[in-house]
Length: 133
Image 1 (spheres, helix red, strand yellow):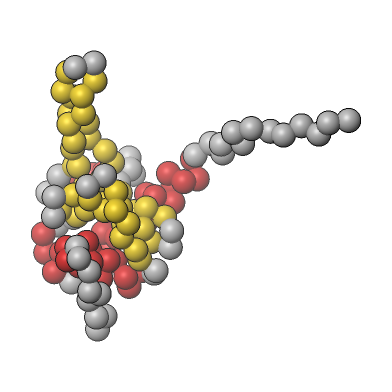
Image 2 (tube, rainbow, N blue to C red):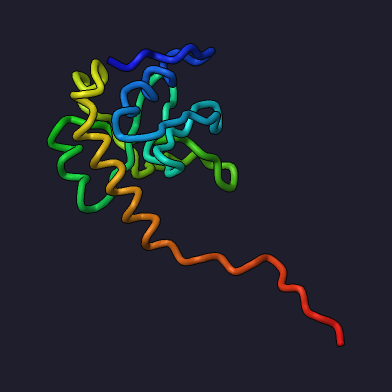
């Protein structure tokens, strides 16, 4: 059994413990919450003591069927508040209780994150230094 790490953020530490069987897991502070990284790839987030895991078009129906809820935040644009949903959904409540119950959901999140990374267009270097003759 994996030991739960000590942390000033107990729920984020609990989520790291839940995801740890899949690989090196880490929580990093992110906009008032935490980003959850598995082997350096963001697969989830913690906000307001709630865990959300990465989804995509291929996995969304499973999250919805399990009763998951999307991560939604309010942003202000041109003075108007707008609700924005991200591709992170809550796992079933029972999965929060043990790493074994979380593993299928964490694997879906990892697969979605890997697909998203594969679809990204590589960034161009910010500045290309030219050699002077």
